[in-house]
Length: 134
Image (cartoon, rainbow, N blue to C red; front, side, top):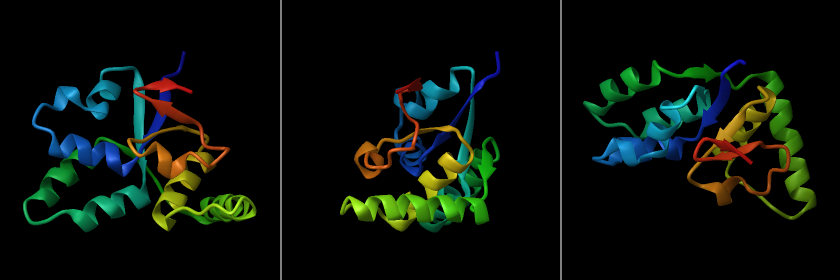
């Protein structure tokens, strides 16, 4: 059986970075399972945007362990579709979160976040919690 692929949100990476006891983080739990971890290039952008000084080297080393899915034409079309569906329901989402969700949907992978409420209105997004599929 192939390993499950899960795209993690920026929130999961930041939580890992900030906590002293890494074993109490979602990223640690996921890394202990037979899961292939990936991120969106938008998450990569968010991480590097917030990094300062010596943190850049930490993040370069950390992110080298992830598959990074690009934001491309296919993903852009998925993002437009999501945004249009949300508008029909009078909902909205931050652009970065929209692009991250679109990346997960375009690549047909499960998605894990600590900010579930940011993504709960995206019907085609396969959400996971603590490494288990919903």
